[in-house]
Length: 155
Ligand code: CA2
Image (tube, rainbow, N blue to C red; front, top):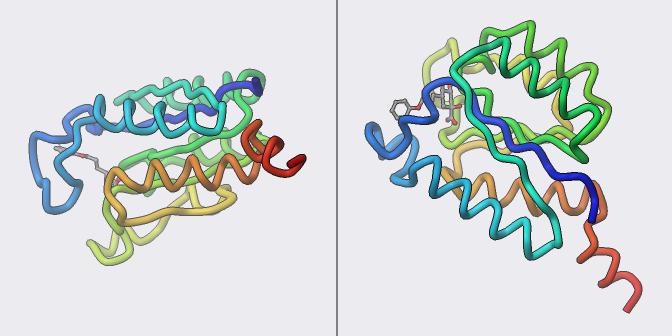
């Protein structure tokens, strides 16, 4: 089995399911973790799923992933729009990076339209609520060539 895919979540995503369901959906972060882990399993992939409200912790986890992850799925929440520290950590991450957002920041306030994460990401998935994480697993499995893909190719 390849190294796990790191799925990292930024500030206030621990509050999902409690407010603004029309923007972010009804799923809690625990629901999203289950959905993502179950879908990853269908490709023979494992995930490490985490959330933090702290920018330095996010930087530490991205750096940890350089050694321990086969790819990164990142919803950096508000750090997306503000954090050069996260951007610099992503620039040093040499494996695929998929940026995910539950909402579509492009059709919201002006300050959400710029993403430092996008400058370093392999690809971006916006606006599909919790299904975006499932779509990111599909994309990541293709990018890293999961066991399931390997099996399909050899048949
Ligand atoms: O749409 C996304 O996934 C975002 O990353 C969510 C962030 C926002 O700052 C980004 O612009 C887009 C906000 C996450 C906070 O989520 C809450 C959910 C329920 C209650 C309070 C906060």
